[in-house]
Length: 444
Image (cartoon, rainbow, N blue to C red):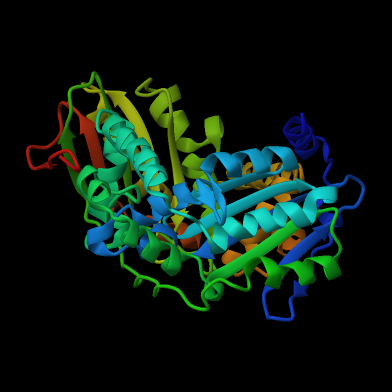
């Protein structure tokens, strides 16, 4: 019942308009900084902790160690085994979520104000004293291996792994953060401990919170919660230039529909041209049914149910990329249409009407993201990791409105490179050039 109450509260909290959000920066005596949006109207707190680095910190021969480690953080800590930890969380109506990504480990916590001290003490144990019991390791390892075996028969997973391999050779981004069947099977407890010590360190922490907590209380709890973590962790990996060349890479797979990912070097969020690029992408393929690629590939020609593009802004590389799926005998035509539209936008930019619609779409949807304490805390942590100023939530829409038609035309010419557009296709595509590169299924 208590857990149910916590779930309900997380959805009942009504967030203020973005312009009304007051973000307070607090710093602990030990020097840990956090961003906070106090909201005392409901006795509930959402806390978000991010550790920069994530799975990209894996050693080359220990791929999957960070992912396995993160999966074990709630499988027992301190004096509690996995079952006892789950029972303690339930009794406190506290929810903890641990996730891993290429560039971050994310820890989310939600708890009632009356249980704050006990909930944070429980959370602290998972961060500074995880047990990594042998039975828990084997249980979570089995789950990871099962997922990897399942992904080996999923075209979407296969094409994702192959695309990363092509775009990021000899870099952690170029292999799956979950690891392979071989690498995960070989991981030892010592490898998991090393991954924990390397990833969860004070020199890479970003913290945010929203809810019933004062700035003074927030500053006071940071050192208790995080002060005993290692001061420094494993070094971050190097940046990697994306050097794609135009063409098609095929991974043969027995399926009636081919799935393709495509892209080339993109643009970072710290680039002055990021917002024009963001709007350009909405027009090209990121704006749903109103996007050009949906019109040309789906509506006019019926080649797919869906096609989209996105800006992938990783910490050490950036892509402008997309996805399409089409019947094996029509995917070649879809690839040609996408390439043609890529070149057309590079040459001509967008129209004023398209730009106006994209601005309306982006500015209108942004306030909807702030729909509760949990999303607010997550947004604040993301803002910090992306090195945005503390007033970004207030100024973001103004930055979008300030983009001109000439800005987008200039950035489209700079960013979109048909001569570098690489397609990676999984399936049995027909009609592709004989020179198409063929690769084995990744991991097999």
